[in-house]
Picture 1 (cartoon, helix red, strand yellow):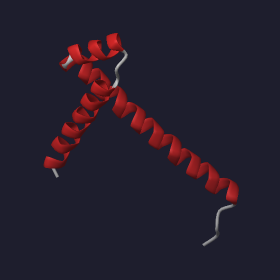
Picture 2 (cartoon, rainbow, N blue to C red; picture 1 turned 30 degrees about the vertical axis):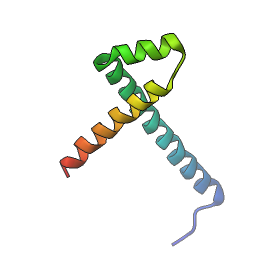
Picture 3 (tube, rainbow, N blue to C red; picture 1 turned 45 degrees about the vertical axis):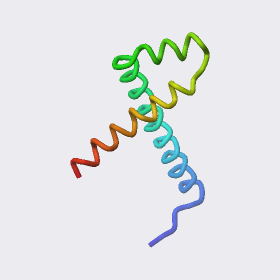
Amino acid sequence: MAVPPPHDRRVVRLAGVAGLIAVVAAVLAAATIWLMLTDPVTVVTAVDEGEISPLIRELAEVIYRALAGLLQYL
């Protein structure tokens, strides 16, 4: 089996990294939208006061609950 040239390996690695970044961005966007729909007070308070730690904490909780729910099906 022939080894692909270094250029091809870099393109494949770059595509993998770009795909991973896209998935992470999509998950964060979906969690933010879900949080805005289910807990708008936290979002408004975080934006109004400039304090993002409650927002980050809620986003992490939303993502955790979603992953836990998905893992229950497995």
